[in-house]
Figure 1 (cartoon, chains in turn blue, purple):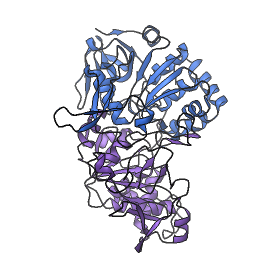
Figure 2: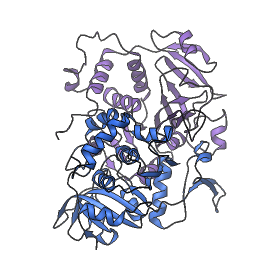
Figure 3: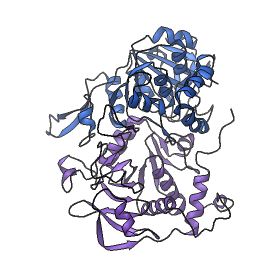
Length: 272
Length: 273
C-alpha cells in the first residue's frame, strides 16, 4: 500500500543527492510542486530524466542542482528556448551539465524497456542522424529472425519516478486521465515512486481514457492541489500559456531568474 | 469556415485583405499542400498553424496528430504547445506516448509528417540540435530532436517549412538531427527507412522540391513578389532552379482572414489565477 504523506516528507525520504530522478508529464500533469520541493530542499548532483525538460527542469538546472540530463527535447513549447538549459550547455552556468540526448521515440521506448524489465528496447529510429555518434546509449542490432538491422536503446530505470495525477484513493491507488504521456512507464520503471495528486478521495470514479496505478505499485502519494501549475491537470485547471510566455523573459537573465526563484519558490510554501 | 471566424477575426481591421506578409504567404502555401491526405503528424510552431489553417479552410476531415498522443485533434484555436488541453478535449482518442510513436508513427500509417528546421541542406536533411562545430560547446544550443527523427523517417511523406536565409539553408549542417534524403538518391533505402521522405520545402520566398532523380532540392515556384535573384542569394548552396518555374497563387482574402483569426487566438484565453 502506498503511503500518503506530506510532499516535503516524501521528497526528503525518496530523493537524495546524486540520485537519478524522472519527473514526467507530457505538457499535461507536470509535477511542478514536487520539483519546487526538491529546489527548496536544495537536493543536488541530480541526474534529471525527462523527455521534455520544460520549465520544471529549466528551474532546477538554473539553481545548479543537476549534474546530468537525459532528455529528447529541451525547448519552451510554442515559445522558444529554455534559457537556463542553454546557459548551462553554452556557458557552463551555474555548473556544467552532462547531456545524454535521445529522440522522443527513443526515450519512450527506453521507459518501456525499464518498466518491462528488459535489457533493451528496439525501434526504427536514429538511422543516419548524428545522435548515433554523440550518444553512447544508441546501438544497432540484427533481428535473429530476418537479419534486419534495427536500433537498440537501453532501459531507463530511474532511482525515483515522480508524476502528478488528478486523484488518489485513501490506499494510494492513483487515477489520471487526459494526456498521460509516459507517466505510467516512469513510475513502473523506477526503483521508488512519488505521485502528487490534486485530491485524495474515498472512492475513485471510473473515467474514459483513465490510467490506474494500483496502490501496491506506488511508494508514496502526496496531496498537492494545484501542483501542476503552470502545466495543468485536466478537470482541475488549464495550461497557463501566459506564464510559459512570461518565463522566456524571466529566465533569460541570470539575476532575474534567481530573484524569481527566490521569491516564488525558495521562500514560499506553495508555488502559487 | 464558421461564422465566428468571419466576424472580428482580423488583427488589424484597417489592413487591406489583398496585402500579406511573407510569413502568411508561406503558411497559406503549406496549408494548401495538405489537400488530399488523411492524416498529418504535426510539429509545433508554423506546422501547427498551417495544419490548423488547412483543417479550417479546405480539409475538414484531416486528422491532426500530435506527439502528445492526441489522434484526430480538432482545436478551434491554435494550441501553444503540442499538449494543450484543447487537443485532448477534441481528439478522437488520446493514446500514450509510447503508443503514438510505436503503433501509429513507426509502421508508416501516417500520410504526412510536417516539420520545421533551424538548418536544412540541399537534400532536406534537418538540424534542430546545435549551431556551431562543437556538440559539447555549441554557439547555440537548440531544443534537439523531439519526435522529428522518426517523423522524418516513418511518414509516407514529409513537408518542411522554413524561412529562407543563408544561415538556415546551409551547404553543410552543424548536426544531422533528422534525415531527409541523406546523401541523395538511394540513401533512405540504404538506411532501411520505409517512409518516402521530404516531398516539399515551403519557404517565405517559394517552394523547393526534390529532383526525382538526384533528390537535390530544386526551386519549383516563387511566391508573388519574390524574385529569383533573392531566392538564390538566400540559399547557402548553388540552388538549382526548375525549367518550369511556377508562380504561387496569392493568398485569398478568405485564407488571410482565417489565418489572422487563428494567429490572434493562439494559445486560447489565459486562465484566471
